[in-house]
Image 1 (tube, helix red, strand yellow):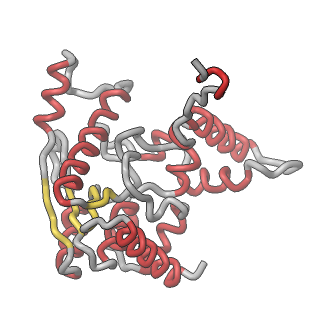
Image 2: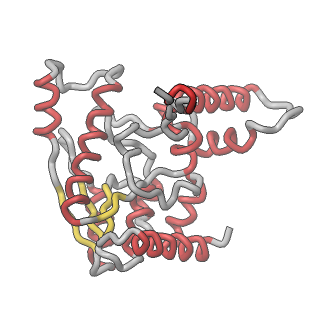
Length: 261
């Protein structure tokens, strides 16, 4: 892959899209991870107004990587503006309303997804206020392979600049863009769990392994090892479980003959 050309293509695609839809700029949530760092850098390269939004929720430790990347963006690009909004009160208020403990247990996926959806609401508030487009940060494996995102949370966006790139390809793009080395080497995490669990721990496989499974699933008469079979099973299970996120929302099409009252 010619990564310089891919970078240029994505930036041009973003420019064409924003011109077509008559929007004033872009808004993107920053996590300090490699996907959001690469995406925010590419968006910043368009020279259109770009708002990077940091949204901590009950985080005791400062997100050092996120802050470092934001400093890089605001120093390098005059079109980038930074905003930080602590959403802890919103989250704790929700927990109080539904009468649950805000301390998230290992099985509280529903509550974890609330965090992601609160962030989506915040992004769209500012997007509507400024007529900006909300930019997605998911890669190909997350968005179309295993559906590793929150429906109407981080999956609720206006456009996906890197969703046709695998994690490995995103890593190459990060290297070409000189994204902070600490971010490139950091273990991927969605940042939603209190125990700081990684994506790999949640998925049961690395992104590289899932990429392999995504490419191999259609091949037949291949003698897989025990480990390869296990990875394929993980991929297939996740893909099937999360397919409702990956496909378009189904519409019940009523036969015309039944509409004749």
